[in-house]
Length: 274
Image (tube, rainbow, N blue to C red):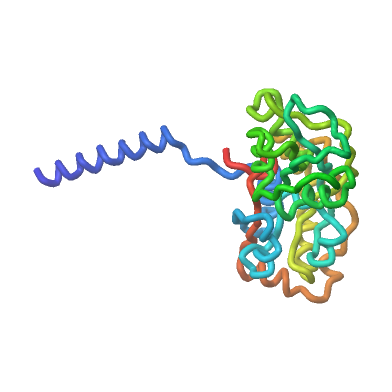
């Protein structure tokens, strides 16, 4: 009798857990870079894990080996190439300026409050453009926080990735109903790449190999179509082959771990919870 009651209690508890799970499904990390990283890992026979990081601390996370790659809409710059090893570019992007719909076009003599993600290409764009010489830079922890600054009126403008702006400023979103990109701001094209520790050339050669295979079998195209990024894709370029690199220790390290950890921050359509 006691056993029957116990089994009944277990059955009721199991049903309750299943019901709760159905009502509150856990979200999953998705996005273009997330899906592409998984595909490249599959090509290389290496499992992939993801670690959310503070973007401003990305190089520290990498050097301390808390992560193995920075793969998160990471703009290749000459300055960054001095400190990191980069993959070939795989996507083109531009920095854009976002304002409220009521904002007029940019006027260089105006003192704006401009929100940027600390340590980002948007922050570099602010620093390097005389248009903002009278403005104040407001550093925040993520690009989505920069958008929220403008939406709330705490900042006048935000400088963010055009890839991100195209997603968040769609008409159906809360941001899209109130914000716009300013058309008189011109910023040159930049390219996303994957950053590794300086000297990890064998590892990067393998990443390039995986990127090339994913592009050739149309996996990259399918992922881009899924997130509306087909026009931003960049075809693979030539790269140093794995066999041509004498020091293979960086790849040996990953093989020994049987996994690679990707550092990311949340911003759609690159990496976000859905």
